[in-house]
Length: 441
Image 1 (cartoon, rainbow, N blue to C red):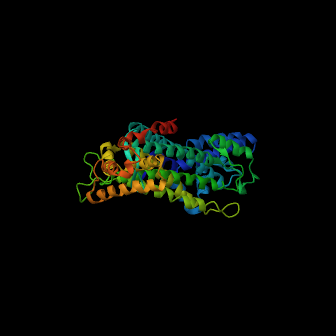
Image 2: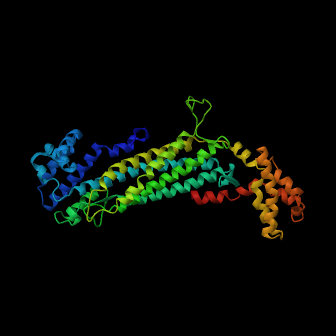
Image 3: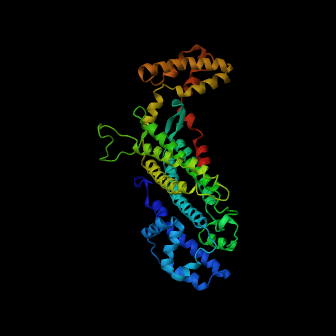
């Protein structure tokens, strides 16, 4: 976890102080349930809350104890006993370390998801606002990086909105799946602790119950969770890459906001680089980096081993911290994105109207010509326009129209008025409202 790419709202969840506070709450809620069953005295449960609840756990002291005992949970329990005194013997009755560690990880991941949801909602709000703003801003669509047919910049943003709306639903599902509690004791059989203790702790910690834990919560849940974060990261990168392409000098249809006093290069004062979206690509790689290790954590030996432990100590904070930062960075990029509609239209017109080629292909087939002959005829004229563009850098407005009007094979099938009517760009925008209704309904 790098502070440069971290927000306090998320890093606080993964701090040692927060972790130990959650450990205590799980133990103390468990004591309440044990007292209700008569396993430990009610007075002991109250004393544990009174003294432990107000305690400021000393991280350095716990680390000192762990260096001797070589066990993090025992180190914490030893430090806790220094606050509670004699009643500390009733703490951790029938529990095993995984009950504390796994349930704590569930709490942290659930809380982290709630923070991620704030960033997700900010991204969605930004996408919707800018999509509405550019609903009818015409721009060329590209396939394989090559001019295809027109779309609107608003539709491009609406597509991103729909994608992130799916990401939000996946995140909700992932939270539900990961927010589980396991207080089932050694090997998960409840031999030394009643299942009602687990139910009580789960309720108090805002978790559901793991139906069957083999001393650990099954790691397929975690694999699905981190895979979801990886998908969201990929969606972030998809938008980032699109913006980076649009900001290229030869395109310059949109660009990241460049603030007063900002510098683009230490050597070249003219540079305005897409540094934020490039950073988002890098952050996406970091988040996805956790997916394969999370998958590999699923196959533990028998009822448990700890091969997953070191992995999760890294990928838990790293993935959520980086994704949280990336979501807010992406939201800021979209909110402040500078869009150039005039450049979009200019770029589209550089190919002299070639984006209407399909209309002519279809019109000629409707006029009785075979598809093969129609394609050959339209392509014959289109390639001449391509050659003009290649040699001059701009085919010239109306180049495709002029060639078609002079082509007797075309004019024998279509009137000149019909040909001219097919260069109305509004044709490509006629179903924008339908798309928006589907996306934003």
